[in-house]
Length: 169
Ligand code: HEM
Image 1: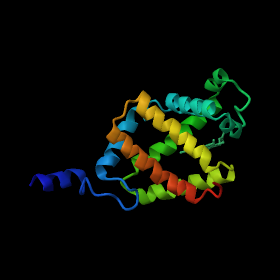
Image 2 (image 1 turned 180 degrees about the vertical axis):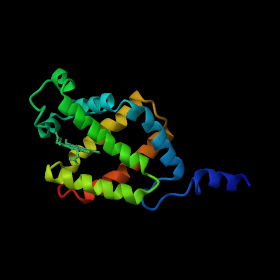
Image 3 (image 1 turned 90 degrees about the horizontal axis):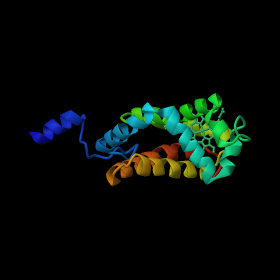
Image 4 (image 1 turned 90 degrees about the vertical axis):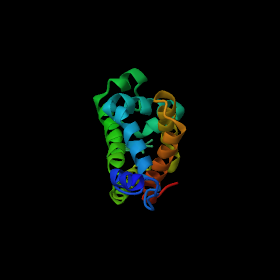
């Protein structure tokens, strides 16, 4: 009975892994719940994420024409850059929100892969972005190991499909 109730509550077996995303329903819930506070302050976290990325690898800054010659204080005050940071966060949010229909997320990520392929952004920079995001979730937001596992699986899933359309390595 408890088992049936749990399935009903989750809308399926909470521990079955989706063949498309590699995530269980419990992990989908973990990713969605832990993303909420970050998304609520998308501009702040997005800009902070990019500033950390630029510090970790200054080469990444060169892709952003509007701010590549600006120092950190000016970047923080650039509306154009804030708009980009929010675009980035919104793309993650769309993927997070739609994880229960992972095929839709696949299509969204392929489109992102195509747009970034045109900009010649290679996987190396995506991996560096991932490291910064993971560091932020772990150290600033104090996510647990289980929650971090769910995030690692989620990022691998979306990256696989971005990379499918990225013609560079
Ligand atoms: C998970 C990783 C990433 C996500 C979700 C993401 C998301 C986005 C989105 C939604 C846009 C605007 C729409 C579009 O053009 O597709 C965008 C634009 C852009 N992205 Fe990314 N991006 C990611 C990684 C990167 C990386 C690693 C770089 C370079 C180091 C990069 C550089 C750019 C540039 C240069 C633009 C254009 C900015 C502008 O128009 O001012 N992105 N990104």
